[in-house]
Length: 131
Image 1: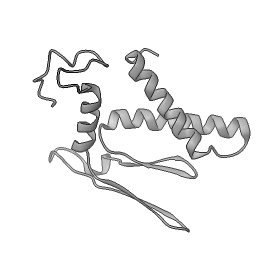
Image 2: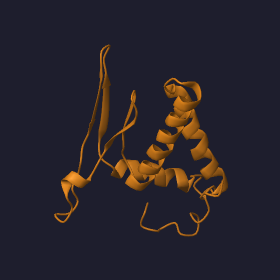
Image 3: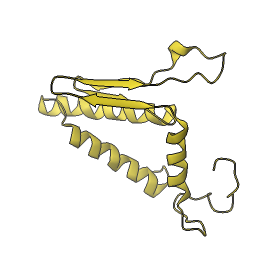
């Protein structure tokens, strides 16, 4: 998939291959597949987030890899896939949560935050990163 076998068809964001696949979606799914495991368990009293950390090289410091992040007092995130993309989305989510709290003096509702992130991601998909 990442090897470059379909160079003719994956240069644009929303071009379908002759097999009917959208390569942008395939690449995103493959990035998550190559990522590590992240699990969340919810009970009536608490939520537990856990993430597996793989060290691909002896030269990497295991303490420098973060997979769990706090977005707001009541929202935590575990990441899989590309760390750079995840950190960008987490920073966006933190700004949205802070903005909501400053505007309405209450914590952001999770469904509103998720919709905001999804809308932002759709803009980048639709306009190729130039929103």
